[in-house]
Length: 264
Ligand SMILES: NC(=O)c1ccc[n+]([C@@H]2O[C@H](COP(=O)([O-])OP(=O)(O)OC[C@H]3O[C@@H](n4cnc5c(N)ncnc54)[C@H](OP(=O)(O)O)[C@@H]3O)[C@@H](O)[C@H]2O)c1
Image (cartoon, rainbow, N blue to C red; front, side, top):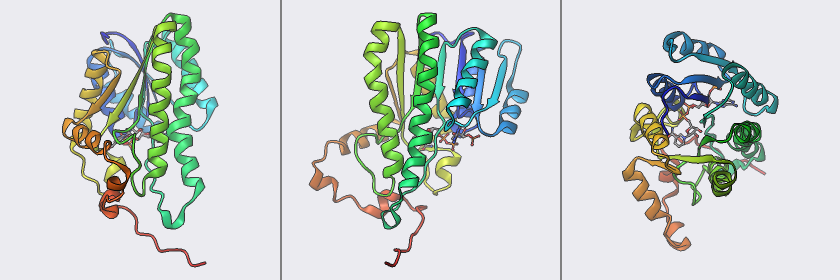
């Protein structure tokens, strides 16, 4: 895909990876529509990055609300007449300790990470069918095949994205000329993981470059960094008894919140 001059929608544009993706797209003279909850940060992005060849529109959008997403798509189509590419990065990482197992954490993770993508797909598909094609890129995570202690809510929401995107891919392309790309990052230095003191092995800028390059090369799955891809995919092959020997606290990471067992 040649990105020069394309109309690109970015959700989670205010995030570590989202912001770097936006910078890469400005360099390619894309016409941009940016969405996230922090409107002041969206305005900052427009004020600092917009150029004559790369106009930027934005609107507050909480992906938990279907109406916000409908308005985001409407605004983009009304302004630019089409959407060539959507890059859906909005997401949250919330620990769900076994000691205080809580369905509301799982629901929130599913609502933002998974249903946020589902609502976008529901609005994007009619637009892209009508215009004869397009590309939808959704961000999952590298460990999307096996559970990780303490991070089940996040992992389940991301595994659901990987499944859904793969389910749509062949038919979307054959019937409607729509490409579905799944991005599976390993750990990337962004505010999301800083909060849990988890050092990343790629910078947000390196991640953005890998994502944009993958889209340009029409990849179906974009996963990085290579060292983590190899490690995780080998780990995926372990039989359950070996997988369960995983050192639990190490898997949760050093910044994982410590939790007191609730007394009955
Ligand atoms: N960093 C990593 O190591 C890593 C690894 C694998 C996958 N990922 C995934 O990569 C994506 C980008 O993450 P990041 O690392 O760049 O994290 P980040 O810096 O925390 O950015 C998250 C983005 O999501 C937006 N967001 C959060 N909740 C939202 C909501 N309810 N509605 C709309 N937007 C919302 C945030 O914007 P507002 O706060 O302004 O709404 C922000 O723009 C996420 O999907 C994440 O799960 C990250």
